[in-house]
Image (cartoon, one colour):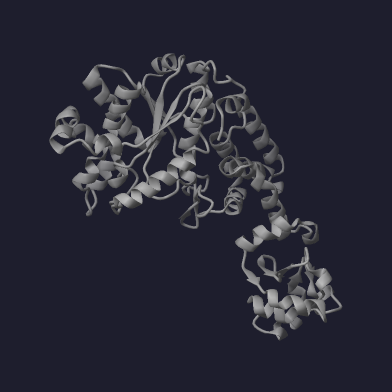
Length: 446
């Protein structure tokens, strides 16, 4: 988990014992393009001159957060680094309904058991980024704890009375859904009331004075601010960051239509690294600024260096290192980069065994321990090995097109023998096959 002192030192600011001034906090967010909407800026900056409890919500609609959530997580991390205690809200109540923002259809409802499992998993993930003791300690809360005990009549009296339908209808996500044939159910329509009540309860019970989120939540945030004011007369604040859209117009965090998840069981660290390594040149600087703790000036220097020679992809490489290590720890980077080098032109014989262990989980792999014995005698028949792997239809195809088939980075056309001796196995057990430029297959013999 990140600590306040470590995070703040990385940013070149406070150690967490004394909060960074509110003006400086907001200026840093603006420099990172993390500031879109807010309540009165001067009043917010003044409030942030002293420790300000704040919150951001995450609905447990899956058992993992994804790359699209990372910006909101990093907002909490940045505020915690500046000395402000974050409340990470995992919405067991709102997750039962689903936020209509940005959606064309209603979410499928999840039962309590699934939501509880998702909530526990997401809480564990958030614990990797936030620290829960010491200065500006974080708190994990679930809005189901204060929503479930409240009856319908009590909720309508204490919350519904203070929110006008006019305000709710003015929300963009509501207006867009009302214009569709599918319409908008009353259940989803009530989501804004539930989120507004979260702000009211957190302000009342924990002195939370600020809600942060992506820009699609601005309407919900304003509803909460207004509810707090109408209930108690207190002034609270809201701040949103622009949603991340890649330079090609695609939604950040999507890979071929699938989310890039923060859970390594859903998206491996290798797959996350490769996704970031393949972002466009124009995405390097904004993603470094928004998703890492690298100081602003350094982010801009990295981007400038990258623009001078984009073919080296140094900007993407730094981005992939920073984000993947932030999510999964720095220990994963060396094996990932070694494995990547093996696949993309590096010397296979120079790679460590752990690189091949990683590749066995990431590329097509055949485990054939029974072939070990033959490798020690006359060697493995390479054309047969390519057929067995599925890279060739017949041994004749391999012999006829030997120049297009590779074993451990060496073209078969350059080999005298069409067999692979035991001594040629990498680390005594791996054979890396390739057809053409990009079709890889790993054979594990022992």
